[in-house]
Image (cartoon, helix red, strand yellow):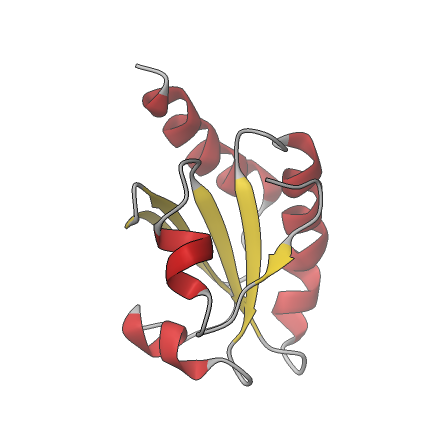
Length: 113
């Protein structure tokens, strides 16, 4: 877990996203995507604020297409929250900070039950 988003690849996807103990929020993005640039500060802020409780990862779909295909990522940005190796929340487009926080908080609280 880190205060900065980690870059994930198709090669390390399972180890970094599916096998982790903490929930993982993955930002599927591309450099040419304007909405992706609007969501990036939200993703970075969440990584800092939830450090130690949530892993935040970014996957460049142009360079790493397998994971995006595996989860049917058809629009960018797409944020998928994984818990216990399974996708539990999915958000597409230029989502708001409040929307992402609600999704993350619900699953962080749930894991403490």
